[in-house]
Amino acid sequence: MTVPWVQCILPVYGKLWRNAAGRKENAAMERIYCFLIGYACGCFLTAEFVSKRYAGHGVQKSGPDNPGMASITIKYGIKAGLLVLAGDCLKTFIAISICSLWLFKGLDGLAVSYAGIGVVFGHCFPVSRHFHGGKGIAVTGAYSLCLSPLIWLITYVLGGVAAFFSGYLAIGSAVIAVLFPITTFLFGFTMEEVILSAITGAVILIRHRKNFRLIHFGNERNFHSLKSIMKRK
Image (cartoon, rainbow, N blue to C red):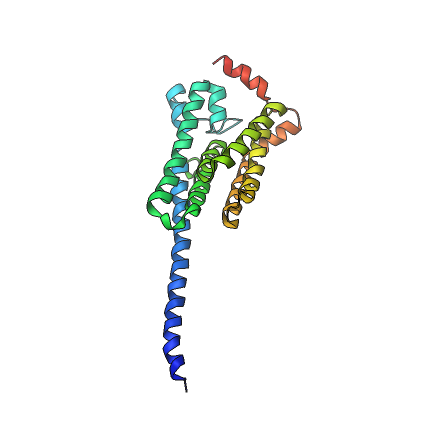
């Protein structure tokens, strides 16, 4: 026989439990939606359109070419590279703004992180190019800037310094990939946001693995030779 006060309390706790479970389910779905919106925006490869504008065809899939700022700058010059940079940053800002300022305000900073990492995955692994995309440096920069301007400043200044003194852009990218989750942790972001930034860093390292092999065997073009190439554009 159930005690009367228990009969009164059980429905209340049951309702609270169902409400809590519903909120968790909604929050999980909102995270997924943020990622998918980011992924869809990331699949819009600015470099493809800039390449068609300058050369009449898209970026080639083979060799060192990839639909990113660095490749376009080397092939078509600084102006073309800046167009790619602007487009890549813009698509990141659009995705993050849609999620964090409009559709999913309740997620707060998590909307920034999930939309941001979605853009990174869409840019690096776009379904439209059989998952062969860019290397994620520009979009990660826009993502980190939305997360914290100070994090962006630290990671990208130190990454630039590393690239300059090592002579290799990939080394600078590696520094950015490592520093992004470290600075996110040190600046007191949630563990979920730190994990997402660490996954972003891992994606950057994976997309640069060919460059690291070329550096190891002494076949990678260094930063200073790239500067001389760009001056001729």
